[in-house]
Length: 453
Image (tube, rainbow, N blue to C red; front, top):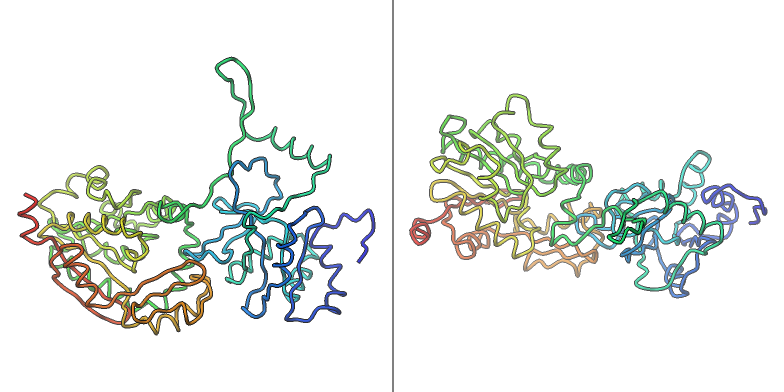
């Protein structure tokens, strides 16, 4: 398709102009590889892209992503950024666009489409639209796959005009700095924010409220009964310890997210506090505390591995008075996504906070319902964990490990009891298996307390 020497229509309009010949030559279940004319790629990447079968896996498109961003600066405004871990699923892109605040890679100029996806792009192309706009919609549906460069060569073709454009861009970002010898230099920073390993909190700390609440909404119907059971289970413990009275307990939620679990407990305890190290979540919670609870609710940013010190430093003295009972809770299987060493430390901090008169409460997802969850939750929501096959499922250990890198473990009642008694060294005061949940309450034993004293 020759669009003429003076063509300035842009990529979308160019693809739209190609649709008649694509419709004629390409079958609906085949794939179309779109290669930017201003890019050069290692031959193996082109071969891999050409061999991709999108329709067979139910995907709509695939994008080549470069992850080696160290030292990369002066990127033009047209750069498209990729976020590639939907709740720990690293096999596909869950967000893409030119304005992402948190990302782990950039789109490298090679895209594979199904003809039907290209048709949608062409139809939208009659207005002001970019390829990234359509890809963003595809990513939200969980059907945007990723092809990694994996160190193979690719680059944009440099022309005198493009080099000048980049140079001018660099002059308008960064800042002037005077060295010790008086020499002036121009400093240009690294990319805005890079996603990091969940083990150091990087990804979770930057997870947006919108993405998290979308995930919560997806899970809501499957876990609705457990949400009610959790509130009832913890609420009864609050009532036992004095409820909303002056001498009632302080309830502290570890990993409060956007506050869904803590909200119905505000009427059941004297004070409530949510802890999370994602500042977006904490700010959202602070802005959405009901007016009638403003004086008795706090949300703080911090590491639950330092929970007791954090609470003493951030809460009013009356809240953390040693004579006030404390209930430390971690619900929604939050404890299960923590790295093992972090989880061990958090358990210990929760036990210390509970002492011998309060409670530590952990809500696990029920291993006896794992098979149902695989079929009716994970399989139906690939945007949460990525696509998977039968060999990813271990029914004996109630563990799902998908090709995306997502891993979840569901806990049976006997395992939950063993965790409290043998790993944590806590006395189990209540254990309830109900629906999708295993709800456990415990506290520090008198023997443990005496040993510490």
